Image 1 (tube, rainbow, N blue to C red):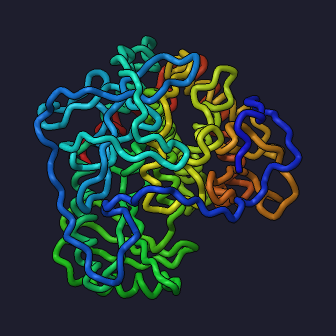
Image 2 (tube, rainbow, N blue to C red; image 1 turned 90 degrees about the horizontal axis):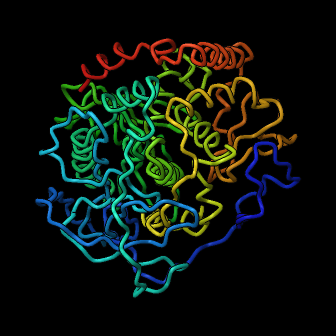
Length: 486
């Protein structure tokens, strides 16, 4: 489906057939689907068993099986693959804080400093030690691999200069904590139980930045309710039913039905400012959650860089799709594509190199399993966080041709802009990795587009001379605001 190695990695690649629609291929995997909460294969119409979350047991030393490492890469610590147990949504504990973290680590399960692109841990039950089953492309369940040695690389290795240190400080103060994730998961768990009184076989997923590792403490939570059946349900009708239900729940308040292109039911946890957006059957959000999660943990620099850039864009009022500027999803794809197209890439194309792990027709209950098959990717690019941030701003200020290029994380390069309806007369073109439409279509006014470009140029001009994050972003004020939330 995807070209594997034939695509050049440069920014100005030219290919004449860039946008073929995803082929109508159904992938059949010869193994049982997991029985976790994010499995949609429900026999008959019986009620689902209750979701039960088991907190992590005390840490005990364990041997870590290795996935073969890609060539010319440093080794990284791997994590065990565990088979899903019970009805749980598989959620990865957060990575171990790298440097100077204010967290009291005694209250968190231990984690390695680095996490592999394909070794994200999704199951709440960490007591199980058995390897997970392999996908159809890796049929050998008895594959023996040597142990990966623990990596000595930390975020500090990319933060020797002032600017990079400021980025690390902002990241560690603002990143979503494990307690935040547990809190959101608790609401999801209870909501699923209550929703199943109305829709017995519905499954509720936590998606977006809360789940992909790119969230902040102040991040809202996205939920996707999947209802399978022979007849596709009307989202507005389902959300209206749920709105009536939610008004009777003692832990939910301020419900609001928003009739957007993708209708959502917005609500809050009662007595707090934790907001949720719930959609119906928007399953591409589940797919891109686990794709972005794989990128987020592929290199230690990804999460700090994306968090800082989102804070920068929000501060300068160019990060709000509802107001005609860039969505957070668009910004993330722009960052990833920049890192993919450097002379020494920080990231590969996971979809191109491992198409079966992210196949757009993969059964949705297998989506969390796909990334587990990906070996470690460690870049030969040793640029500091500050250098990457400055380069990102410079690239979109001076090097990127907005009128000629389409950003494609799927291909790890830019594609030539053609005259199709999807790209014609669009100010910014960013390809959605699965649906291949334009996720930057919210930018439809010239004045907003020019403001976005001007902000990239101005911030790059300032930062390249001052090399101080405070020159483009009020770091302390953002940290204080973040600390006041939740």
